[in-house]
Length: 86
Image 1 (cartoon, rainbow, N blue to C red):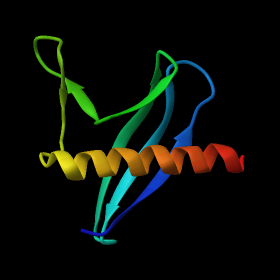
Image 2 (image 1 turned 180 degrees about the vertical axis):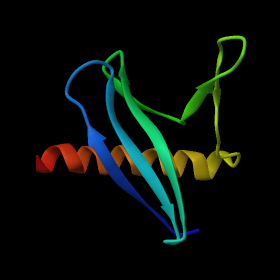
Image 3 (image 1 turned 90 degrees about the vertical axis):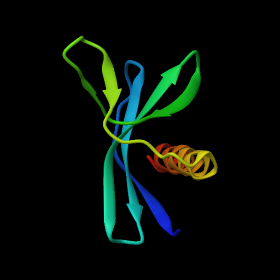
Image 4 (image 1 turned 30 degrees about the horizontal axis):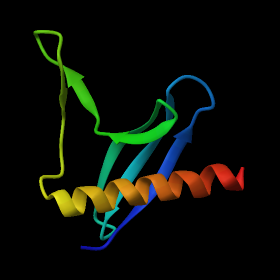
């Protein structure tokens, strides 16, 4: 599967560091990946929505662990490239 990542917004304050979009074969765009810094490490989270019980649930997820890790690595790599250019 061919995909690329686009960093949409970058923030310099708080834990939220930015948003990313996953583009699959230039045909499918999955938006809303969040890049957060927790305990001085960067993590990728899916877009989520609050349910009736007040708990946050992912709107989508990547079921295949290998592909999920590859996507996470690519998002963080593109984020690092983006902030080093600025």
